[in-house]
Image (cartoon, rainbow, N blue to C red; front, side):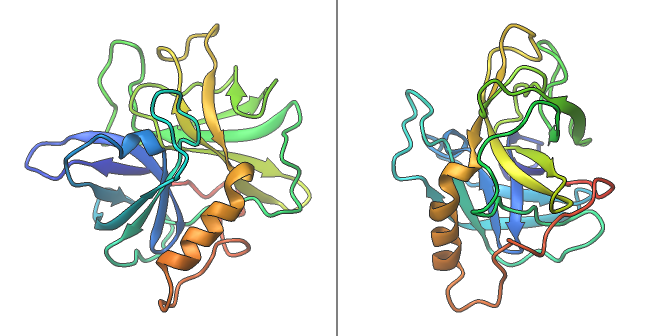
Length: 223
């Protein structure tokens, strides 16, 4: 999980994000609309910083209802992959859009650790749970908290031995309340839009579209 900050002398956490190739970051649309300040990306062990070159919000995003709550950042220049910085796989077309009960999923972010505590940065919170999803975007077992918006929901697919980005944290009520599940943007519904925007934003640049070269093992941390 990457971190989006407001530049300045003091720490100002805004939202999470996830690297999909060396030049591109996915986040939630509501994180970047209606805000006047400039963003900066923080990656790895908090030493990799990148300015944002451009922001593309889904054209049908509705702030009032959080529909199509997804956006793509193009970085000022590419990040270099390492043991702490890796892109995540986007779900391929042949992957079933739904998730079975008991699917192994991970969420991560810099949000609050409870309803009354401030964001835990500089330490990324990494959570593992077997996910129960009555609806693909509705998770009653994995809870996002305030400050986690834009962060990744990554789920394991045994057939390919890979983790895929299945959701982007959108909204929820409170922090980890059992009766109020977290809501995630379903990435399989936006595969065509994401791929189109990646190709457009990287036209003429030697970067990859992350469908096969991406995170594969649980031992690699998404930070």
